[in-house]
Image (cartoon, rainbow, N blue to C red; front, side):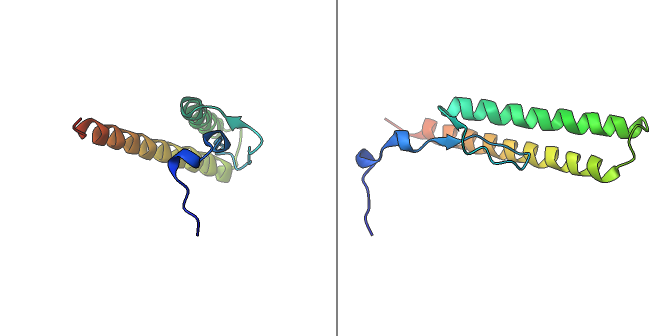
Length: 103
C-alpha cells in the first residue's frame, strides 16, 4: 500500500461534487470552492423547505389530497435541514479547535 505525502496530492483533482437532495445525481456539475459548495447546499435546503411549505399549503387548502407527497416533502426538508445543522456544528467545532491551537 502506497502512502502519499500531502505535497504529492493534486488538489485540483479533488473537486467537490454539487449536493442534490432531490435524489438526482449531479456528478457532471463540479463546484470550484468550498464556499460555493456550501452556498449551493444552502440554496438546495432552502428550495426543499419552500417546496414542503407549498405542498403543505396546497393540502391544507384542499387543492390536493395526496398526503404521501406532503409527508415525503416534509421529511426531505427536515433531513436536509438536520444535515445542514450537523455540518454547521462540525465547522464550528473545527474553528474552535483551530482557535485553541497555540502558536
